[in-house]
Amino acid sequence: MASGVLLAHLRDVAMAGGLRCIEGIVLSENQEMLKMCGEFGFVVVRHKLDPRLFLAALDLKHSS
Image (cartoon, rainbow, N blue to C red):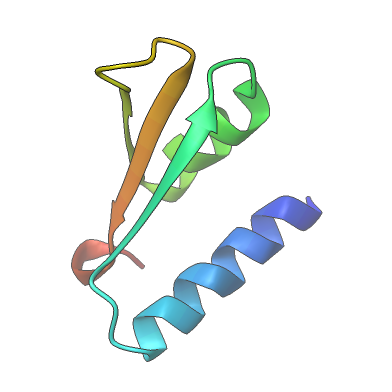
């Protein structure tokens, strides 16, 4: 899956650059991205102000 490769590369570059976290906003209809975020270890929660959105965050200190 090309998007999985891209997300893995983004994670690796962020870690190499010393970032501690990656955060993103995902539309609720984008089920593929929500699933992939879960597979990568992102914590995914519904946005408090907009039920059409989810917030995804990955703690890079505990990511492989």
